[in-house]
Amino acid sequence: MRTLAVVGVVVQHWTMPVLSYSDGVLTTGNALSTPGWWVVTWLSQVMPLVFFAGGAANLISLRRASSTRDWLAARLHRLLLPVLPLLAVWLLVPTLLRDLGAPEQPVAVAGAIAAQLLWFLAVYLLTVVTTPLLAAAHRRGGLATFGVVPAFAVAAAAVDVVRFGGLPQLAEVPVVGYANAVFVWLAVAQLGFHYADGGLARLSTSRALALSGAGFTGTALLVAFGPYAQSMIGMPGDAVSNMSPPAACLLTLAVGQIGLALAVRPLLTRLAQRRCVSTALAWAAPRFMSIYLWHMPALVVVAGVAVVGLGRATPQPGTVAWAATLPVWLAAAGLVLLLLVRVTGRFETAPPQRALETQTPAPLGRLVAAGLLGATGVLGLAATGFGNGPELWAALIAGAYLLTKPVVGEASREH
Image (cartoon, rainbow, N blue to C red; front, side, top):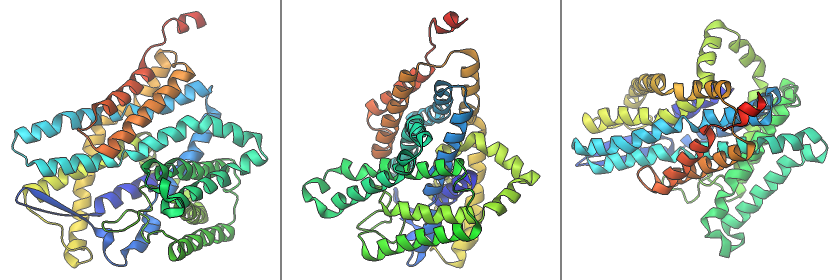
């Protein structure tokens, strides 16, 4: 499920751009803003499934780990260290391109778009850092187990009340709306805990479909009678975005998508047991973060060559020309991504194992600080783009340093 969700994110991001280039200016549009295509986003906006599967995987791996400290060290290595080569590229390549005569505006657009998607890593870092605390509440049972998701849902709804005019004096404060980046996605990740425990996994197909129907019906009612946009991704020209900041209607969307995924779980299980599929899953699983981080640079390379270099504008979405061009576009971006992941994937797959085998993990407090610093730096870069805010780069690098700095003396005392 996690692999399909990541692939869904990548394919959607590669399909959306509508690009043209003239006189040094790159014009961008969104194919999913085509009238009526908003309905596709109710399934293609798979971030709810990413956080749901991530929450389940986090709880399963935490329970298997020898200690919370070892688990957190391994998870943060896999999330933070792969960002460093991406930072290095965006520190050097824009200057190189300008020196070679590339127009300023397309280079700036590429850096901004590639950085925007780092929001996911920032929020997921917070999800990982809080997993031990939420897992402890989940383990205690009772209201501590079943009250966490409703509590986050109520908080998300309260944020939307403020955001959409319930308290005008607070509605203009940007940080108020973005509090839902925590409330919405932590609630969905907590639903993953219930899957890991077997509760959701035991649902029959009919009950899973009923759950899905309830979720999508709730989403439809919120869109029809509430302040929410039809599209589950931000669209040019829309007065409201359901994703930036996240809106409470993403919770009902999550319920709909999770129910649908659970209904097809037997099919997915059989599919995953096929040798070719299991081989692909085994390759992709240790490289999820690398795939996510580099799929937009892969798109930038293809767009730079095809649109800026060769002057090939995107055909009108929905036309025969667009449908014929799309497979070639996706294949080209996929090939570039494979090459990038082949070079950079080692930062995700190799360092955690080496670090845990050759040195004692950092103290738990330092690990938490590393995660929070990393989340702060990444979130700032997502908001401002690459090339801005050197203090944001410093926060991210400081987090990586705290994570990898050797623990002096502790290993010798243990021996």
